[in-house]
Structure formats: C-alpha cells, structure tokens
Length: 311
Image 1 (cartoon, one colour):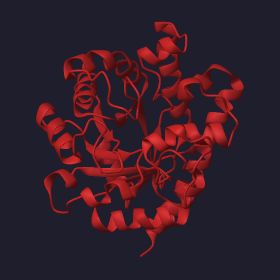
Image 2 (cartoon, rainbow, N blue to C red):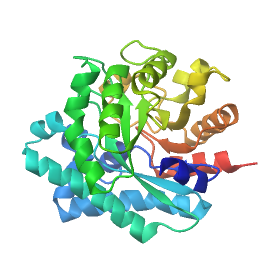
Image 3 (cartoon, helix red, strand yellow):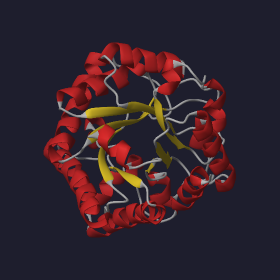
C-alpha cells in the first residue's frame, strides 16, 4: 500500500502542518493537553478539523501531488485519554471517528492526480519534548497496541509514530503496527544538537529500530525540529540517512525548552524555511513526504511545496 502510493505521487506527497498550533492560534480552538481529537466531540469542533485539512488538501490539488491524511490522534492513547476523562470505549470511538473522518475527506477530495493515503497517527506515551520514564520495547508495544488495532480496523492504511523521543518506544510501535497488519512510519524529534531527547543520535535510533524490527518501518521522518537542528547530522550516502523519507519541520528555530516557555506562537520565516526544504531535497533525493510541525500552517506548506517543485 505505502510503496504503491508513493510511486503514484511523484515527485513527493504533501501532508499537513502544525495541526495543534494552527487550531489554537488560527481557529481559536481549545485543545486540552494539545489533543486535537477532542474536537471530534462536537459538530463545531469537527467542522474546524475539516476546514483545517481542506486548506492543506487544496494546495496538493492545485500542485497535482499526493496527500497524506494524518489523523488528529497524536494524543488519543490510553494515558492521555485518561487525563482527558475518556473511558476506554469512548477513546476507541474517538479513534474510529478520526480515521473515518480521514476516509470521508479522501472520498470527497481525492483525485487521480492527488491520491490520498490515510495514516493513523500515534504520539508518545509521555511528553513529546522530553524523554522520561522510558519504556522497554515490549511495554511500548503493549501500551500502543490497542490504539493501533482500532485505527487499523477503522481504515488506516499505515501507522505513523510522530515525535518519538527514543528508539525503544518506536520499536514497540513498529511491532504493534506489524501485528495489526499495517506498515509503520517512524518520525523522530531532535534537540538543537541533532540528538533525540533521549540523547541518541538519529543514526543510532534508526539503526536500533531497523535491527530490532527487521527493517519494519517503510521509512523514517524527522519532525518537531527546525532544519538547522539536524541538517548537519545528515551524512549523505550512509544507509541510515537513505532511510529518511519525510520531513515535518517546525517554523521556529527555538529549542523545545524555549517553545515550551513561549507565550506567543513563533511562525518563523516561511520563505527561509522553504529554502531549507529545497536544500534537503537536493541532498536527500529519496525524500517523498513533505509537511510541517509546530508553528507551520497551510501558508508555510504552500511555500515549501512550491520551492521543492522548482526546477
């Protein structure tokens, strides 16, 4: 499924930007615990989600490239559901509803020139910026399995782990996705020194996941970091760098600690960010998925996509 989709969407597929920051700062939505899926509980919230995705889909359709519908489920695993007051059945229903919404968007908006893939988004059990209370892979697999099973049964084409802070949790998610019969995509976040919050290098993390899962992930991504935080670590020609197939960068050059402490959204410089992406595509021709993370919106995505399509 994933390989076929990527082959159909040359030269790359788009995905969305920073969903939580866009919904909060552009659409004035309240997201307790940064949980976008919580909006599915009201007609007004669902409409806000639809508007958000449609703004990004319009860019892909205009440019004639594919689009990955990343479900708004980064915070809809068990511990976060508990924190938000969801029962186990209610949380499962929310995960189903999120994937079903992605299916409805694909049915309405997908075209021959803009094929769409539904990705079930899985976030970290803990904080997306800090590697604390690390689980062993077996514990991570058990923790994430239920959410992944629900999304797989509801129509997700692939499972994407976003903002992974350590390799052990990523291994567990890749194994759980494989058990559910779905291919996985693993996206790591890094600090300003290019290392994961756990202290692992990108190279070590990717190699650890591949070794422990027999190369289960379809590809790896980097998200929730500015390109200046990781560009220098990408050693062209190495096996691990060749496994990086997507980038979802932050608009801001600030560190995770600085972003946590910020009281206003740092939208960065969309034009400069687009130039970084173009340089990354020139260095890493295997990049197939382009999107954004914190502080980016559809305007950043449009600038990035246009820069990457320039001859």
